Amino acid sequence: MQPTDETPEQTEAERLNQHCVCVTLDRPAVVANLASQLGDNADEILSSTAWQQLFSNAAVFVPGRELDHMLAIVQALEAAAALPDYRRRVLSWAPQNAMINPGPAGAFMGYDFHLGVEGPRLIEVNTNAGGAFLNAVLARAQLPCCGGATRASWAEDFDTAVIAQFESEWRAQQGSGRPESIAIVDDRPDEQHLYPEFRLAQQLLQSNGIDTVILSPTDLKYASGALYAGDKRIDLVYNRLVDFGLETPEHAALRSAWLDGGAVITPNPFVHALLADKRNLAVLSDHTTLMGWGLSPENAQLLRRGIPRTVQVTASNGEDLWRERRQWFFKPVAGHGSKGVYRGSKLTKSTFARILESDYIAQAYVPPSERLVLVDGEREKLKVDVRLYTYRGTLLLAAARLYRGQTTNFRTPGGGFAPLLLKD
Image 1 (cartoon, rainbow, N blue to C red):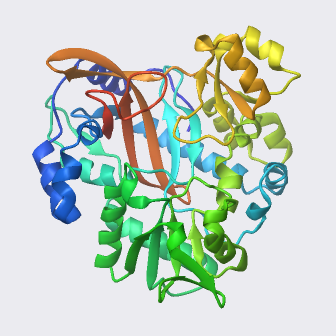
Image 2: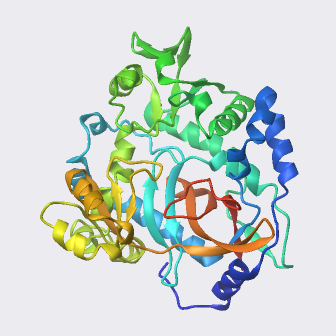
Image 3: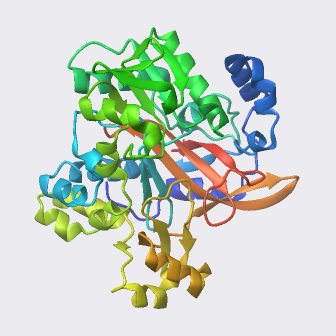
């Protein structure tokens, strides 16, 4: 779907975002829901300052056709990623561990957008996008406001869609059946900010008959062609590591299982290399090259309009990028969680010199939209980005993040995750 001229639908959603200060979150319902699922240490987690800023009290309104447009961009990108020439190009800079493709497409793909007057712009792709389970809880605890009808922006049955996703990942590599055991894996998982999400995922999977454990990769061992946690064989790994190529020594057992096909790992190094390496955005924003490789004109146009121009930072273009720095946003190729990113207008010469010595991309700056919220009784505008959680191009859930500063941070009073409500 191509961007359209402004319509009454768009105007109404924008009007609500700019003027509605209703508190739509039933926070006691969220706390009660999470407390019942998290068990003994729920009070300690939910009373922390960090958790008070994880969920915003406000919802974000978006026209239904704008969500359709974002999903069309996602589908166009995944169509481009299926092209043989595209794969050859992006795998040329991928780590050696990423050259294997056993079939899985990647659980919980995350596509992050900024919304503007010219339509949505895709600013980042993530293969281990966090927050889906928490946003599902958040979406179920919303109160109606402003007397207007809205539609939900998530799968009709999120829980069923999630189980179907993991079963599909299993069958893509193993051919039939379903996993009997799943390990949710991250470094020191109980210390992670989103650890409660791991617990929610564990509970959902176990309630659907799949034995599920939460582990650090150092808890795993690889022996006789299989992955184990103690004496328990692990069939599938829900991978939340930010070592996207499984290259560090601490991840040796997981790496061996990946290279030998001893377990289904999702998301995996191949999927990250294909879709989420930041250098790929330079290819995906080059619609002429994509059409030369066989992408349909319709999909090429969607990506041309939907992905900001992106270039790799090199010594040869450094002078131009510095001169035009206010037009650019700089991101480290190997970065995650908004670490090491810089808006060009904030750069100093010394910082830019370090960027030139490192591995960075420059992306045309796309200002985020804004949402009016109440913070301690005062009206304040916060920035908005939108994340689509998808599986094989199908929407699982869409959510917003509200923040202050140059990147999302979950440290903004009044900010945090917010449900996306479709205004018809």
